[in-house]
Image (cartoon, rainbow, N blue to C red; front, side, top):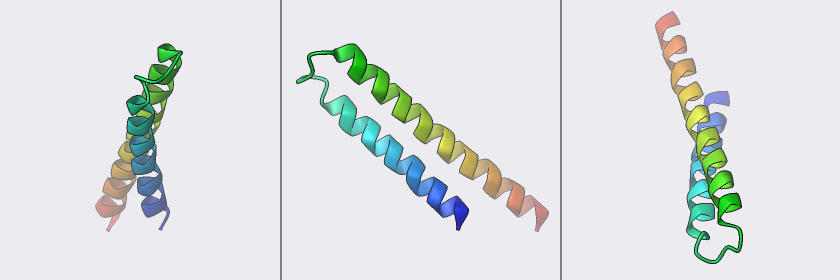
Length: 62
């Protein structure tokens, strides 16, 4: 159950990163938009990587 929640949060962070990045054209501070987009994208990728590692460890123990 915890893996599913982490995977969903990681995917949500990646989706939000895309949504933030899409607002780059209307922003008065593009550096802030790019920084927050990269931060959300990094958090999403790390969450999905953690899910993969935890799932692999769980499968190796079975």
